Every structure is written in structure tokens, then in C-alpha cells.
Amino acid sequence: MDFRIMGFDSPLFHTLHHMMDLHEDGDNKNNPNAASRTYVRDAKAMAATPADIKEDSKSYVFVVDMPGLKPGDIKVQVEEENVLLISGERMREEEKEGAKYIRMERRVGKLMRKFVLPENANRDCITAVCKDGVLTVTVEKLPPPEPKKPKTIDVEIC
Image 1: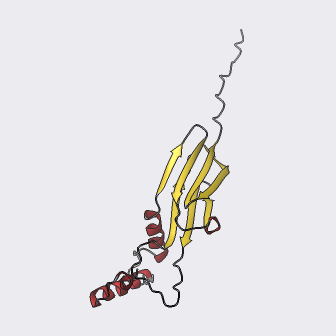
Image 2 (image 1 turned 180 degrees about the vertical axis):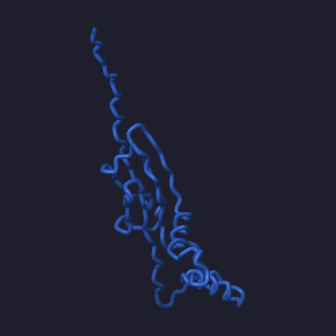
């Protein structure tokens, strides 16, 4: 995060910014237990991406806010057979000549959520629709299994 954008241009904030950059560079040679840069970035992305999950009799519906993203910038994938991964990245707008930001409050960067799908989710029937910055992913349910009928065994007389 660049503190200068928010109007904090003091030496203290410059030092904090430098320390955060060192941590994000992934220099984990001194501390092998430190989180990797990718892990930290993904954790931040998941924490900052709100979502709702609804269930009805035929499907699971995941509603995720993806502000400022075009449908082509959003990826919906199923990993490891049962993990629904929704991701995208919102890039910072290019500054035009003669104009500068006074304040930047809108979020830029990676947006991501992961959801473990229930066992009865049909991984082959997934649809995704993005409208007005809201992504709706619908995962159809598998039909319930047929109840097992008891097996009848004939009793023989000896």
C-alpha cells in the first residue's frame, strides 16, 4: 500500500511502507516459517471479497461482489474436484496527464474466494453470470440417491 497516496508522506510512514515491502518481497531466508508472499496476497484478497451463499431445493448459489470487473476479467474454476475458486483482479486506472489523485479509497488488486463444495454438488452443472459488478455462480445439486430396497432371502427347508 502506498501511504503517500493517502496524504501520509512522513518519514515514519515511509519506514513502515519500506518494512511492508520487505515482507511482501518474500525474503524468507531468515525465517522459513514466515508466510509466503502469494499466501499473504491470497489471504488479503479472500478477506476483502464479500460473498453470500444461498441454498434451495435444486442448487447452491454463490453471490460475490466483483466491483469494477468485466465478465472477461473474472475466473470461475473448480480445483481439487470440490473447491470452487472465484477470482479476478481490478487494476488501477491510468493517470491522465495533468490530473492527479487527491484521494484513492476504492480497492484495487486481487479479488478471490474459495468454497468447498458439498458432496451433492454437481460439478458438471455450474453457471456464472455477472451483472452490475455482482457475480452469481449457480451449482446444481445432484439428485438424491435412490433408497436401497431391502434384499429378500428365501428360506429353504432342510
